[in-house]
Amino acid sequence: MSIEMVLEEKNKCIQQYLEKLLPENEGYPIEIFEAMRYSLFAGGKRIRPILLLAACEVVGGDTKRAMPFAAAIEMIHTYSLIHDDLPAMDNDDYRRGKLTNHKVFGEDIAILAGDGLLHYAMEIMADACCKAESILEVKAMQAIAHGAGIYGMLAGQVVDVISEGKKIDEKTLQYIHEHKTAAMLQGALTAGAILGGADKDTISEFEEAGRKIGLAFQIADDILDVVSTQEELGKPVHSDERNGKTTYVTLFGVEKSKEIISQLSQETMKLWNKFGKRGNFLMELTEYLMDRRR
Amino acid sequence: MSIEMVLEEKNKCIQQYLEKLLPENEGYPIEIFEAMRYSLFAGGKRIRPILLLAACEVVGGDTKRAMPFAAAIEMIHTYSLIHDDLPAMDNDDYRRGKLTNHKVFGEDIAILAGDGLLHYAMEIMADACCKAESILEVKAMQAIAHGAGIYGMLAGQVVDVISEGKKIDEKTLQYIHEHKTAAMLQGALTAGAILGGADKDTISEFEEAGRKIGLAFQIADDILDVVSTQEELGKPVHSDERNGKTTYVTLFGVEKSKEIISQLSQETMKLWNKFGKRGNFLMELTEYLMDRRR
Image: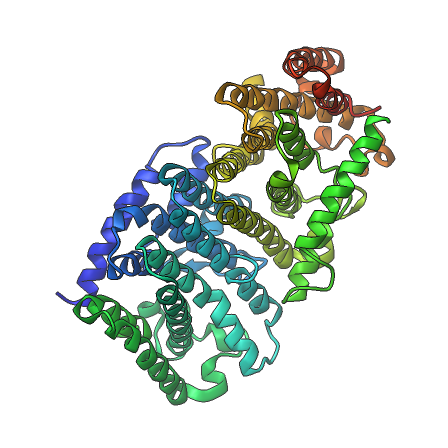
């Protein structure tokens, strides 16, 4: 089975779980539930929950236990996209080929839908912690909160915003990528490993793998913006150039950027190799994420 | 000692704790820490953390244990104000006599500062849960998450937004007040009681008290908007009327609204009475919150 098919299957499984948490035509006031659903079911690849579940599985854990956290991390990711697209932020009209949340529901509801998804993620994790009465759930929640928070994803978002239209150096760009993108992948892999019962050293290794995958994933994104078409990407291309954004491509060019990805990939593969055959899916997924044009 | 002086002292104690969590001139990128600090230290009365700590204390708990949750609930409250003031929402230029967050830092940073405070609240609570390794912390976090979330404060916020400029009935208005305001006071009192080791019935009673205080507090706010001056209130008065907002005053008039408050007050006092002398502070605080012009 191809990696795309495997991912599709895993996506469906997460989709079903999310559907149960936010069913259609349920909730009051319905406007906010519709707006949350709109972005949550807008065709995302569910990379973060898939990584979380894979990490849990590869260390020998039960993925059922990890489902609430997989759902929560996808909600946090979705909230960050909704707020990122707002007129006061990136001002994007399209995301994944569909109108952005505020274009459909208005800015006020879009702000609240983002807030709502973050709130709901917190609630789902707190509920799971209460139900399990185990420190592993609590630590998984901490890892996700840390990855998403003011020293993680949000910090990257902020540096990205304040760097807009400015020339930035490699260090700052790496900071943005490692925080805006990698921190959540680190949260996903760490939380999954924790819930799977991994030891401290393994958890640290997964965290480092998350950093590398996230950085490479984002460099791949920088490359895509240059070499893709709007049809392939589902959003306008060359937007980085138009916005005067510094990217790995503007700093190093496409070829050197690909080399950096290749280096990060090799280092990550070493970790997954330790798990023998069981590590196969994470190897394929890593490759897939770092070369997203296949 | 007057209730104002007692509150001032408790406020200082919470202030010091918050200062440790978000120290001046610390954090990267500094812009977001400054923006979060600006609103967090803008002269709020710290009603929610004070209620949380009082609930913990009155049932015989140690308030030190409750401090992280007191801090978290104040951060969540502050985030909700920042987002509420945004141009796409209430579009307020002033709050507590100071320029609103987006007027000082811009809309993009204000959105992120709000997000940041919600993230940080989650992180602080998750950290406290990990450290304590007790189910009480986890349940307190759940109570706060629930009070703030899509079935609590946020739902009230949304109904408030979609009701703007529309005539609404008493039921909807009560829904808004009970969710936008009361749900967080319920979260505060419930979390405090849980951390103090209260039994299930007591926790339920505290939750109901939070609903009543919150509703009465908000009706008092409706009254203040009509009978205050901008100087007293620290923000423009008669804004409800200008915005065509339905309030308890527009529905029932000032006198009848005062009667409803009085009824809610009496019912709440019965609960605090059960604690004898120890209940004094909560009685005074309840009175203070329901008659905020003293």
